[in-house]
Amino acid sequence: DVAVFSPRAAVIFTPNDTVDLKLSYADAFVDSPYWYRYNNLATSAGAVPLRPERLRSLQLTPSLRLLQGRLQTSLNVSYNQLRDGIYRVPDAVVGSGDPFYNNAGRLNSITAELEANLAGPWYRVNFNYTFYQVLEVEEYTAFDRNSPRPVVNQGDPSGQVWNVPRFFGNLNTSVNPMKLLAPDSLLSNLWVDLRFQHIGSRQSPIQRVSINEPTSQTNIENVESDVLLVHSGVRVQDLYLEGLGLSFYVYNLFGSRWRQGGSTSFPYPQAGRWFLA
Image (tube, rainbow, N blue to C red; front, side):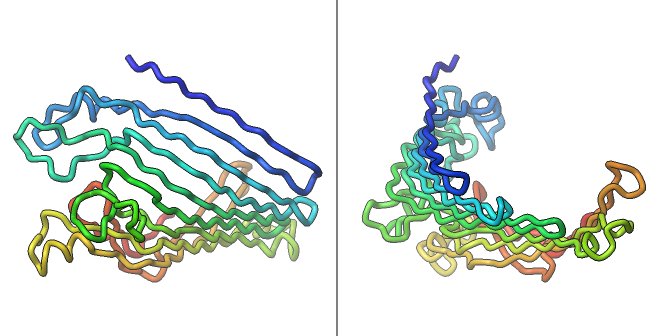
């Protein structure tokens, strides 16, 4: 049984139809899944006494609406305290009887996310960009410039969780000029979409794979370069029948080569150009 007190509160100040300011606080939790607690496979042994993950967050969000509401923008700034985060133990030994999952100590961070939306009769533009900075870490897989231990020192200027970029964002555009030129034609329901996705550089350690080539310290300090992915496609809505639609998309249009780490022991190559219809 899990008994957790999870308070949430928000105050919104709206002086006019153009501007509002929101201040919110939340203390949320997520209990560990069955797999993490009771799995008995030798390669992924569970840990029955896992505690729920807890996250405290204090957020300040000013918002602005212009052009008769067609342009909406907001900036969300937050201070976050994660504790008892569940993660896979990187040095767990198969067959040892030790659990492969554990509760981390704590991870304090700040984030700032800018969001903007512009909508018209034949166009839509959505933009978001996030800055994420680690302030303090205890017993969590984050980067320490002076040691291979999964800990961030308070004075370490890198301030990043392993495999998580400090900067990332998206720009999504959709256009349908036929809405203006031929609003009664079949093409008036044809939209062309273009998406730009930026993923900033990530500190992605290489563990237990070629550990001494060239050196274990170099592998621990491995950094994946930032990448800009472009996705594009077309879609038709209400094709002859209301609710019937067709779409064709190309993801990673230019076939960019990039890798992403996570709970794996090294960053995995990601998909190149692929299609979806």
